[in-house]
Image 1 (tube, rainbow, N blue to C red):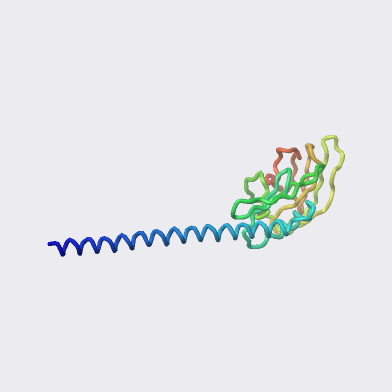
Image 2: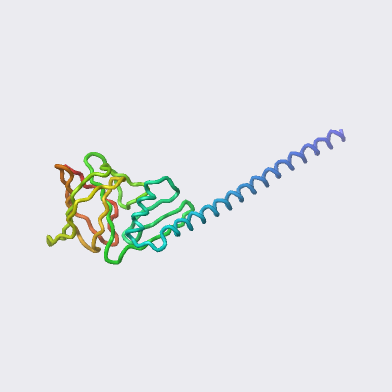
Length: 199
């Protein structure tokens, strides 16, 4: 009876030892994974800041669009204040926009669109890829801010750099179709416009 009791204690001790040893290994593995993630996150942030450091807003926007066409871990988006690059760890590197201008991304469409208010260069897609359009932007008094022929980018958008704090009448012509509407360039304005349906 005594030998059976000792044998049972021995087996229990082995099981407990195995259990706690496994917990220690799991905890160590989790700690190692977190450390690796931290190093990777730090590296991504340094890479992002290194790429965008010293660029002006238009250069930063061009680079963000290029990155948006590639497979990478960066998320890029634009607000009325800045161009922003966010890495998986949560850190964001920003390039400020000019004090007198902001950029508005517009995706004219015929059949397909999506709801959006903040333009993500890394995610937003329009319908018309690399198509020729004509764009006219006017102030409410009728004076022309912009009038030019443009080509939609590989993501289906055109980007307009416009004066701040204005209400602007915009007309877009594509082939024999046209769309018009009003946009604003205020501190709380949308940077992604997806409501211009061509008819």
